Length: 246
Length: 248
Image 1: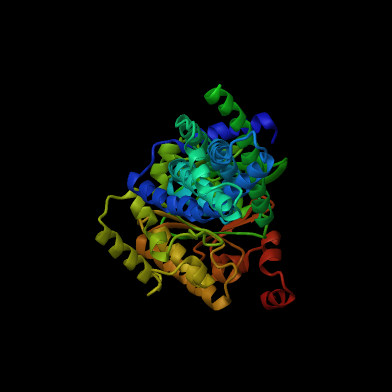
Image 2: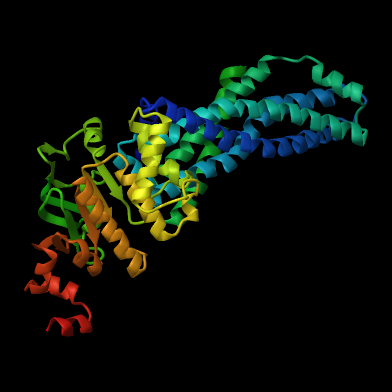
């Protein structure tokens, strides 16, 4: 499949995924299941990674600004802005592309090779919409919460590392995270997260849905979904940053 | 009645079905037999619309199925039940949820009505106290039974079975065959079964079609097979030395 054909198929696939659901109640239940599978089950990894990254960012900022001309509260400010602007949205999205993206691609791919999708089609179910729409809705709704969790935990991790290593005092760090705060940065971060959630769910769903062959191909589709999602996330990160911050 | 007329299908230039024309008898168990790779599954998948024919026609009673759009096909598909080779039960759902799926999706029944119907269908296929189990917790035979229960839950007019007893021991295979035959008679369904298992043919084959290299070679009843002079069919049926000796 060449690139143009793949892009065309992807948009046809997207069009089909937004068709009117056969039974709203069934889709609602499915969405709740996906909220738990793809969203709630990702909270743990987001907390762990955010805490360590917040801590590392703080220490790096502290050791690179170890000069009397820089006020110490800048460490808190640097930690806050790095996490809000880039880490909580883009880096977490890249991590979720690995966790959630591979989950979606392998789940749908396995359904394809074990004829479960054929069974749905024979029943007269719009398979693309049934399988993908709840996943899109669940990720688009829940990933922004993960971003907010990541921001909170990341800054807390930064504070903890700063205080425990003594690179900056607690009042300086807290002053720093309050200093020159731009609330729009949160909005910017959440907008990016919504776009990244859409990319992860649809690209992975697309890769899984068109699997042919056996378990080896499911594995390959899963890997492709992570690679393509990551590339698109980085590309759209650039585009959205220029659009929203310029 | 289901009819397929001059069906042709190729994959990458390799002809899998070559002008196949078959009429499947209404209310009977129709068997498509042939070697692995003879085109049986392609024929079955074309009949239910999972594959599109290169040329030819598919008729369900007086409706030409192959030219219908998704919405119109859906009307006929609600009349179709299908049993897949690997059962194709939904992994993430329990036995009960699997069987209830079609009722959830296509009916306005209350939860109590749906539960009653599911219990009835599971009992009909001899599955008891397994409602809350997942497919991975079932044996191969049980999975087939649940798949049959799921296929019949909406009282379909047509039942398609792709290698229903593959991977099963001979005793369980015959039980599944008998179940398919009983259900066909009970619900007056038109059943089409793909198989290369001669036990199935002799057990339930009211009408048998033999396909070889994508061409229909022979048609008759299970009793006619023993008297057939079709060489390709005889080579297939009496493949072993022992069966050849028994025939003579």
